[in-house]
Length: 598
Image (cartoon, rainbow, N blue to C red; front, top):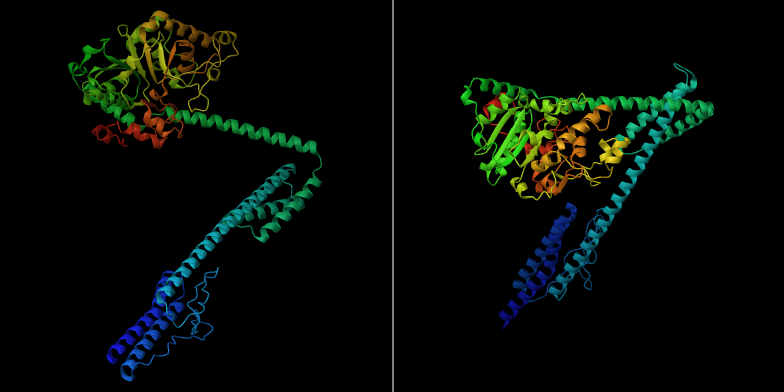
């Protein structure tokens, strides 16, 4: 019985030792993951080792002397500078760890020798530690929010003070303008000195994100000087005259710079990139090296077939034509039924023809003609094609006004889709031929919804002060866009709209009725003869607005780079260029040789 009693007491002693050590291990583990000092961790380790030593010593003594229960005094640290204080009071239990708001650690209170219920003691310790952690996280979160709020408030105060300093500098400059030229009076010197000081204060405050005391003193000094200036210049009439002169001069400068900026932007839009010129020259040279019978493009027998899908494209840009044709054919369900009629000037016809001889668009048909072949139109209508009073080649170009002669150019066709050379086709356009035109001539997307980037009113480009215009048209009539248009050529012929176009063209030459370009005269010609198409057919703005919605572009059948920021120019909007670039064969040897890259 004695050995059995002896072993049972040893087991009880081990259990009691575990009851004391387990909370310490738990506390040590939790604090190891917290942001506590190394001294605190060392104290805990020391407690653990001292406790283990006492337990082992007690067991050894029990084996030698018998079953006498050892005194379970674990540890007591009387040093006041320690991060932890463990008490040996039998009536107390492990206390809680509390963290100060500054990140330091408050001492653990009331560490005990042991508790008869070891499991309960461990559970209570865990709960207290968890509550302490939650309180600490909440306290830290509130402190962080308060800190952010204080930072924002401080930033606002700095910004307001800096603005006030800048206003003082502007007022000082205004007073300097009232002083005689080359004046060296004491006041002028003082005012200039205050301006320099305050400008340095503004720079320093902006850099440091704070306003120093010296900066505030300089503000007070400047305010005193400005108050003195207001007493020196009490003549309000003279000041008003001076300010009016300054305002007028500033407005003139703004007007001059605006005109210069508009001219340079237009010049940049009309400039042909060097690589494009190189490509055109290489293709032209290659074209004239061919024999006459080798210059003919395939499938020319389809050109007058009214049962096919015919597209008209008027351009002098080789790659622009290539992109329009490639994107249209690649999205067509029946590309073998697609027929493109390209008209260009005589200088670029060989280059465009050679490009499609080298890069045929599958089974689609392409025909390239020179505008010189249509000079009979001028004789028929007794007018010079497309001549307007504008220095912009885009408006004076004959190609720009050739669209008003489509029924004469294609006498055997019933319908045709007209495309500008700065569009990219994203979906099958042959579906347009199934649209019921309801007797209308022109099918187009409207641009009369306010708030949209393409919004236009007729009075924006047409002079409604003219009695004839005011009587014939309504200023709030819905407008529409060129770029992707479905024309019913039979209805056009019945209404004789080309003659009406010439009437408006002559009136525009007699008096300025519409701004340069084909759009306003197109609104007048097809007034009440236009069928509105769904907006998804034609999305505009990619040549001047970087804010076109992505979902609109994704749903669009045609995207239009209208404006001066064409995708082939350096000034084009980068985020849209990929839509155009993916239809260009940049791997072509001629493009490589001419340094044309995506």
